[in-house]
Amino acid sequence: MEELEGRISEGQARISAALNPYEVTSAVGHWLDTLRGIEELINLLTIDWDDESFERELYAFPVQQFTEHMARFMDIRQRLLARFGEFFVNRFSNLIAQGAAIATSFAGHGLIEAASGFQTLGSMIGYLQSRRRHLVGLLHLMPTACRGSKPVAQLDTLNIFLPIVELTAVPMMGAQYAMMVKLAQQRLGITEDACAELAMLNGLFLEPERVSIVEMPMSDEGLQMLTAKEPLLTDRLFSAAELRNDVLFIEAAYAEFNLWESEFAAAASVVRRLSKEYIERDYWIQISPTALVRLAAQAGASQALTAALTCGSGTYMQCLSSYAPLILVGEHYLSTVTLLSRFVYSWRARILNRKKRFQIRAGFIFEDQVKLALEKQGFVVQDIVRINRQEFDVVTLRDDVIWNVQCKNNFVDLERVDSDAVAFARYNRGLVRSYEKALVKEKGREHLLKGKLSVDSVQHLVVSRFPVVTGNSRIVVFSRIADFGQRADAILAASTDDSSYARA
Image 1 (cartoon, rainbow, N blue to C red):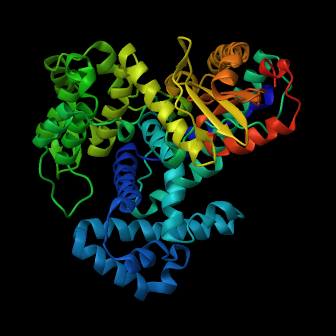
Image 2: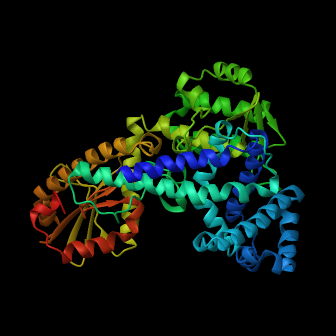
């Protein structure tokens, strides 16, 4: 444990030392511009080109051999230029050039896996998406860590800052997760396994949530609200109007929970006003601290909401968990429409997670997601909701075995436990113990399922929305639901006496 703590402490110091020589204004400004290019690159995947041949050519472009394929690149550049314009294409071109350079640097230093992330444009998108959280975390640390006078040039940003992420931040996060696993295993009293994985993120490297906006069925009221959407310019991926549409879409998607009567309304008001009164070139936000305090007060923002707008942390691990959209540089806060969109979406979760009705609704949606995932793996979902007034979540059949699945949509914000291994271990133990009690309860009433389905063999599992560390093979983390069938096979092949429900 001391070794892990030492690695984390050393990592914190190394990140701060690496940032220390740089002048803060150019560092933050150019890094924000680079992040804009990265977000645009990642979101190219959302564009329907109606041309499969061009899409294959685009995503297969060999970034690592950029200079050797200049003719191919110029063809792609012309196609992007016709769609998005010169400023977008310049950012795209700069990012590809930087990607090729950093790949060469990584390869030269023996970082073969990192360099391979830049083999093609498609792999570059995946690599940057996997590092996105770190890239923003580094941004939040810059105002306190960049104390020198060395200017940062626009074309040097990846060469300067990406090695900090790759060589220090990512390994430090790995040490943090290893410590979280170790403490969780100790608190549970189970055998420590250094190979145990903590699957904190879902697909596309997204953080877990009770129910995402794309999973929420839109009500008639919500659809009506969407008629107020603003028209968007087609030559850009991000804009102030799109940000306001994002806010409207959140309000519409969760209309049944009356977000406008909650503190979300204040956050939405702040974001909308920032996007209208303090916007520059349809993307950048600049506001003085005095104006921000005034705007927040006029919107009726609470102290907690006002504080959440800025990070104010001096440690990288805390910055990594921040959703604050505003970065203080000199006499102004800076932001972008993408950072504001990220913030308002996270604030939505913070408000909704307090609502009991939302928790119940999200639970039903979660059950449907589990059903769909199991059906894809050959489990036949049964139309069973309750038997003798006793409720069941998901009941399936496969190969004459009843698979009874409890769906646990427990949730806690990662920012509360991600940088605090002790807090995670404590919360993890509570979840695992409650899940094990649920398994024992299901074992005690399996006769109801046997009688209903006329099948003698029953197995019980729990699917947890929140990532947990456990030695119990009957507890499946939802981010690994695709492995449910393999887990089921292993359970059948192993001993299945009653004690396995408490400690498998």
